[in-house]
Amino acid sequence: MRIFIALILFVNILAVRSLECFCCNARVEGRIAAFIPDSERFRDIYGTVGPSYQIEITWPTCGCWMGWVNASYFCKDGESDPLKDDTSIRIIPLSGGIKYAWHFSKCTEAYIGAGPSYSWVRIRDDSSFVKTEIDKQVWGGVFKSGLSRSWGWFYTSIFFDYQWHYAKEQQCRSIGGPLFGGSIGGEF
Image (tube, helix red, strand yellow):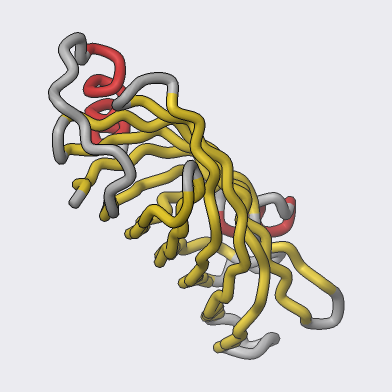
């Protein structure tokens, strides 16, 4: 994950010569992010950070507005409190929405966006005191922001997203949080 993020930052920072850029094209990008859960209980069980792997497709709509869809995958092992039994969580969000882009040059833009998200959450626990498997489908949302650059058909970005979902058990539990990451992809 560190190498991927370093590659994305290197391409964004050190590129000095811009090739001909295509404006308002569809984009397909592979994204990787550090997911930092909001919930203290989540962090105690699964750790403070974990990788989120994503595929995102963006297309032009009108002016500086763009539509987007995203599929993500997060999986993490941990130890339950207080008995330290093995547990794992898998979160698969599907989201979509709109972005608004500000073009600083022909090839560089900053964007913000938002949209709803629907997630499948699976928790497995090896403890004999709780359910061994919990499957939930939950609604939530995503706020997006980022800085992107293109070189011809090649596209890269750094981003900050905030994702929220609430799994209802005895009480609402947050399984959301910020995502910091980068992406590479192509414009068509």
